[in-house]
Length: 356
Ligand code: SAM
Ligand code: SF4
Image 1 (cartoon, helix red, strand yellow):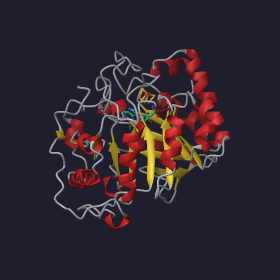
Image 2 (cartoon, helix red, strand yellow):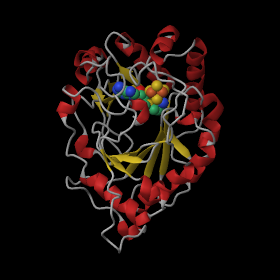
Image 3 (tube, rainbow, N blue to C red):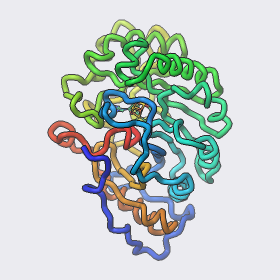
Image 4 (spheres, helix red, strand yellow):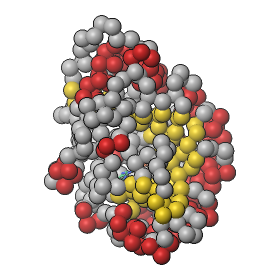
């Protein structure tokens, strides 16, 4: 797997054929050819991470080194976000790598929250720095957190996350601090993998009930450490519901914050969500694209085609960027190509380089 997207990027500078384009609300982008309206931008601010999760990227990668990496500046990302907001995007999620390891992330998030038209700034984090950052994130306007936690067992945590013992303690303390902070919502995400953590399903469910948070289970995707991935290792939604049948799962209505999950209320009081990128795709409702830390728009997580927006960013050319965004929407498939998951040998970028 290569670290960059050069083999699949469109480098045509997104030529602007529409001289009337401008970054105002009358430019709100139309639904794509499948009727999906873009509302959500997922922004990766760094490929660096203080963890090396076994399913996310090769353990051999030096997670914290940015040597030789091209990273967009915060001003670059703010420019791109403002253009997206002008086109009707109203929700931003900041991710990575680990977003909280990037220097000066808090003032950047404040500026992101202040963008006209942005209703929510959310963050996806591994939780390890939340004791330090929760209050600051709230003050910066972050409303919702998704925190990744794949096990409740310290020893197993270190194996999965490639960390030392303190990191488990830091992460659990961070999660509890975040829960006590006045965010609109804190969700916990676990990637369920056969033989790794599937025996902890009930522990997670009890944790969710005790802490009164939404616990979401994500099917393992072949983006990252492809050596570990196989169809047989996926814990599917059907398997989860079967194991939890005694808790009488009742499916809940979706709202705009449910995202791709299907949520259930359980009889022990827990709310769980199940995200099924592999067994039941949710492409019909997809309202998002991704901005990579190095200046590409990725229309779909499970599609390596990307639009290079570096020229538009460098020249601060709003019209060119709008054309690039339109191009990214034009190549967004009705649904992802299942062959790319089942046949192809992984994707060009690891998950830590896409942002999840
Ligand atoms: N470092 C942050 C974190 O861990 O939450 C943000 C970035 S991480 C790449 C975003 C999400 O992607 C996490 O919830 C992580 O568990 C998930 N993820 C990473 N690799 C995955 C894989 N192969 N299959 C499914 N989810 C994956
Ligand atoms: Fe880092 Fe998140 Fe990937 Fe784990 S899942 S290695 S915390 S980017």
